[in-house]
Image 1 (cartoon, one colour):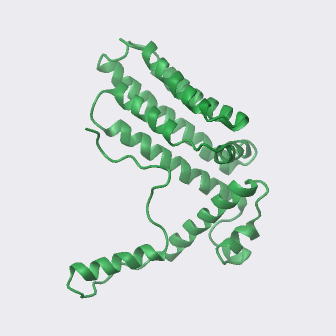
Image 2 (image 1 turned 180 degrees about the vertical axis):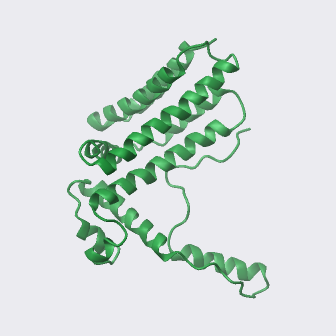
Image 3 (image 1 turned 90 degrees about the vertical axis):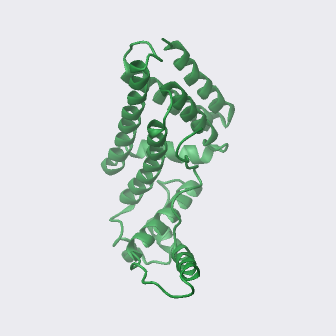
Length: 233
């Protein structure tokens, strides 16, 4: 049996005031109708998340580079000046959107690593999760790669994307090392194996973006599985 539930792309913590209203209703139900003191809402955090939600939607529609801060502000009913109280500029918004995606992906990978069972099985299930959660449309993937390109000239964005790749490779190398230690894989350069898996995932995503053919994702998953087979003890 698998361990902790692995979140999908559509999942995550609920956002918005409606979530807190639901919590209050449930609290009243289990307490016989009596109100309990609720923690003070962190409105700034909620508003920051709303800004990132709006920015992600706009970036996917018109591209991160073409998107304007005033349009993001309008989507969340803020003035441009008020939005700058949360993020100092568009680069900061792009970096925050990228970091949110990176954190989500890393959370999934770390849950696979923390689960019981053989390292090879956990890597294979991570590969399947990767294939299942790549959108069939090329637009979301093109946004990811646009952010990567922007990171080459926007230091704040580049720092996020570099850290993401480094953390993915560190976690993956750790999984390969666990497999070597358990005798599932022959002794080899685990960092090189991690780099290979990362390169295959990014490369086949890029192929999907260019061709619009979702079959590239299935081909990428197959290539990653063949990498695992080549490392058998």
